[in-house]
Length: 240
Image 1 (cartoon, rainbow, N blue to C red):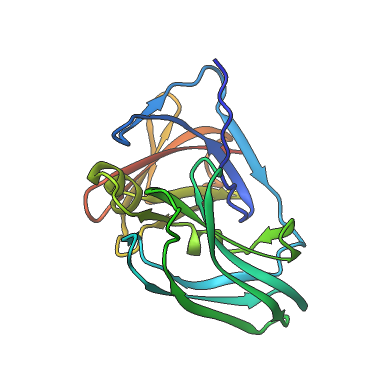
Image 2 (tube, rainbow, N blue to C red):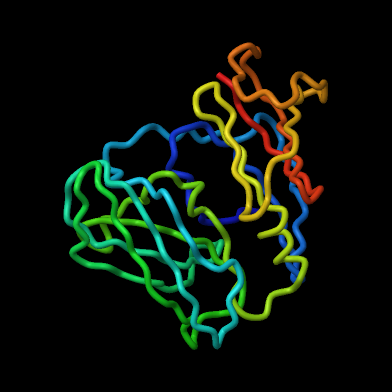
């Protein structure tokens, strides 16, 4: 069996491990075991990023009939005039809609850009979980994500979605990734990392609450992050 899927790749430099899960009709997620070495994706620094997001406010759950405020702040890396897009896309990247499109947005290196407004889900938008995409470019087909991906990398529940899905996507959300030999983590809004355990591929505890991994031997490790609400996220990392 072959499966085609799409997912936004975090644009912040680092090495990421791709994990696979099966999503049932009630939105429950079951991890799929992979054979052989895990798939690792390395994101190199890019000169195409026009700005880094420093603050992003957007609800994590929206009723289909609601009208909600949103705001975004970004610091420009370079000087350019682009169209800035905030989009909602399904996790399969097949459907969604534009939250806002600001043409003629002026980015001046070192200065801040602020975008705010109100958003109402379109009548044809399907119920479900969506990911936030923030991009800028001269045309809709020539855009690049803004930097500081973890600031705006959140999921949004639109309409009637089961409690299981909402809990998985919001309350227990934590991102874990590498930047060189530095371990980075980010959590859902309102949550904090309580502890981080690092295990070898064989399950041996190698370190606890350590973020500078330069002392560890290159290889595959499992990182377990426990949030203040007791939930736990596990990710594979490839240390080089």
